[in-house]
Image (cartoon, rainbow, N blue to C red):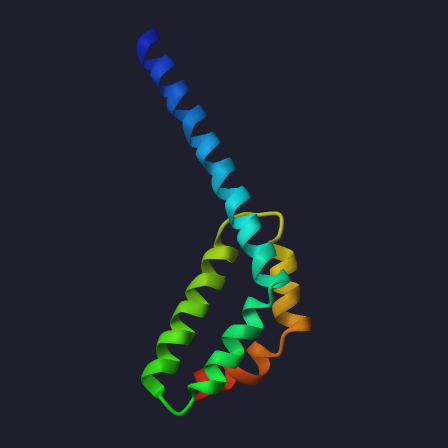
Length: 103
């Protein structure tokens, strides 16, 4: 590689590192908000309210799981807090998600 190519690769690596750090900050903020503003419980109430409409329930569950999956997918400092919240403080997995999947 030439000096110019190495400089370009270094610049790209720096930009990727900056974007990754920015993404992690935003995901951390999203996870904090999911817990702090009881978004998980709001999804649970919404699912219960629309449980007679399978189409609506399917859409709500899809987007809830997509949101949680994306939050857990990224390496973030608040991943563990979200997993603990879902496992110990929220009944959505036990009372709603598992029965939903079983049906």
